[in-house]
Length: 377
Image 1 (cartoon, rainbow, N blue to C red):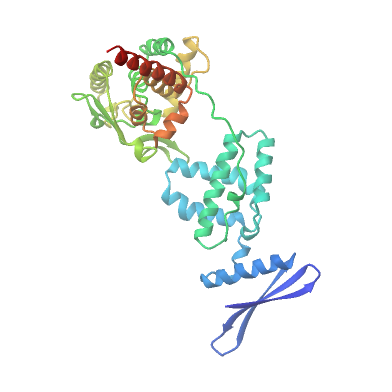
Image 2: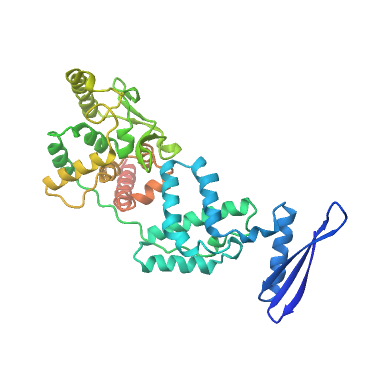
């Protein structure tokens, strides 16, 4: 495939692309106008010729960012990612990317455009972490644009997203957790909250548990699904957050005893309600046996926190409390990672870095003590 450049004015160029001949032998050519320097015109010519070599149409540059992102969401994101992930991607694109950059042609998108968008998001009050997520979504989308041959570089990789500090985790202490769990004894959520505090599992993972996932004889719970509320679909059972999130968690004796009691009460309620209770095998169901809306559990936990006279304690903090207690008791961080279902050991250590200094100090003392004993021996 051949092409040439001809100057039309001081800052205007005409590209001529030879497309060969048609069936009748007539020569086919495509003309493209480019404004700017000769270097820019040469770059545009190379891009068009490369597109043609890959079998793409010459007019691929007319695709705007809105059109591409819609296609990416439909053709890649929804079939290949978890529904909650697709929801977050769609939300970032609709609320933050398209209103600012949607009209820009994909081939003309520049790093400066993305930098300007992110600066505007920060000025509007968005946190650095939120802007980081928007940046990650756009970078991932443009990666696929390159794979599909719609663009020749990922301009999102040309800039750095704003830096943010990971918020310091301040989980409640054991006394506060016991105060909340004590108040929960008077509610239907007693066992669910105890289970979350004593296993570190996520809210959706607890509400997605079925009795077939619980082995009370051997003291283990298998996390194989998660209950989530999805936009336009309602409550849905999904696979765990990641491959590592699919795991078995060892249960302590108090949790096993509480689960046995909970199962007995559940069976009694089923008998008392007769046909009104539809047993779906869930460990922590709603009042009539169906899935319990996660927001209901959260709201009732918040009421307990208020009654306990505590502030700023979230339901998810039970997970942080569990991990922090284990690390402070000297549990191997790798075991903590496995119980929490983190995707990597690095995620665990990064999340609970506030605990590491104390572990380092204790490790230094333990080592020195061991060396001292060896010397005396």
